[in-house]
Length: 221
Image (cartoon, rainbow, N blue to C red; front, side):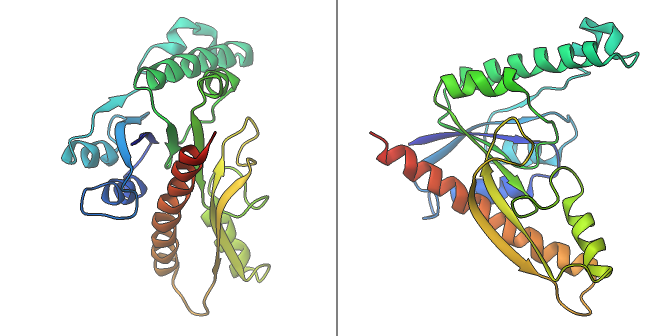
């Protein structure tokens, strides 16, 4: 049984897709179990989704957990102090995750860029780390990817966008893709309708990408 930790920051609709896929009645992820959901925002509705499914939850935040106070110059805008605070946070987040002995960590709308102080301990423990990003490789890296793609569609610059599950590396949204899905724009479609169609596809690929990594672990020598 593959052990999954899911990192969230928001409403948790992609988390819900994973919860639904790991239930006893589902054949999508029958050999996987979510062992913890961690949010960096205490009001994220995804925490309630996890609690509804009897999944342990934790809230871990750079500011409310005191990391900026430990490095007070970060509050004054010092880049060195801000970096030090984030690195300490990342190291402790990694320790928290590793305590549960997961096989896979899934970033499902996790709004925090992680550093090597997070990535290295997970790599050393052979924990797989994947992320859902609402764009195709090399397109719209970083935040607001859907909004930026929509604006380019409206300007006549593109005819499609997409989303992917990719491995997480230090460079933001640049890890090797695991699952990709192109999403064409449709004439006369309202943005709200497009976003719903987009999110439905995200719900599919986060399960598909996780399943591929579970299978990868099972077949590893």
